[in-house]
Structures are given as structure tokens and as C-alpha cells.
Length: 209
Image 1: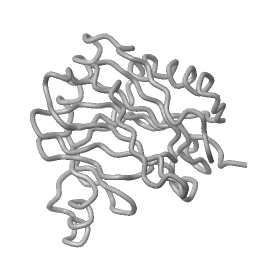
Image 2: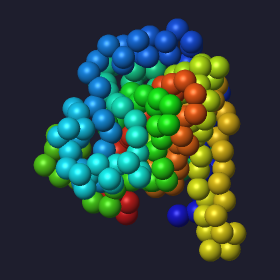
Image 3: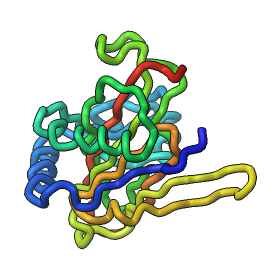
Image 4: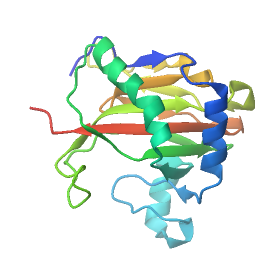
């Protein structure tokens, strides 16, 4: 699917106070290591097999907490709706997954990936079953002075132009929001200094028709 707008952003949309409150709240919760694909989420890496650890080490290193607090969704949902309209996507969605509070410490990263899954959710909550990820949202919670690296980048590869990487510089500003289709490939480059905090939300709906 070729789109005129691969992402839509809102620069410094959320206040510094809101960002700092979410960081403090997220840090007060018990973290999990992040997983990919069919690897089950665990509270610590000692429960993972050697094979799963090798997979994770190549693709993703970060720690997360899942949040379902209403104040988070009330602050961010209006931006998802606006981006969906302004970017001209007009995707049909009706639910959002738990917000993922993510901590990228030094040398942590998330290599190239797309958030969209091949098959609709099954055997989960009724608001999930039969649905797929359609819209992804990343919120920059950190002050850009607090870390280096940790760049959000998009891959616009196509047969004619080859690999085209677009760095989303706007996300570096605290409180900024970037909204993009969940099938767009993206990555977070390794953090080289400090800690980067972000909040990710996926909006889901019935499969494409």
C-alpha cells in the first residue's frame, strides 16, 4: 500500500509535566523484558530459553511496562483520530491495546520491524479477537538533553529507489507524538548515552477488506 503520508506528527503536543508524570508512574511499576514474535513475555530473562535469548539479542533490547490508565488514553486518543483524518488514511479501528511504557537504556535498541501482525488476534479479550493492528503511536516522554542516540527511523524501501531511511527528527522533542500505519517498517537506533523513555499505543480494527 503506497501512502502520501507515511507518518503524521504533532510537535510538543503533550506538556513536560504530563511526560514526567508518566515516566515516574511507569518507573514505579514492575518491568518486563520485551519480546518479539512468538516468544512469550516474561518478567525476567532467566525464564527464556537460550534460543529465545539469541533471537532477542539480535532484534530488541529494552524494558517495558504495560499501562491501562484512562488518563493516558484520554490525552493521546484525540491525536490518533486527527492524524488518521489529516494524513488521509481513514483506517477503520475501534480499540486500542495497552499502552507500552518503554525504557531504552545505554546500548538498548529495537531493530527494523513492523507492528502489524499476519493473523488477527485469537483467544484474547473480546475487544481484541478477530482484529489486527492498524495504527501505531509513539510518544516521546524524555527531554532530548537526557539521552543520545535512540533515533526513530522509518524504512521507505521500494524496488525503484532501493532502501530509503527517513529519520523522524520531530520525535526528539519532549511531548511530541508520531502516528503511523502499523505496517510501516521502523526502528529505534541504539541509545549511546542516558535513557530514552517512550510510550507506544496500537489501535486495532477488523482486517483489511
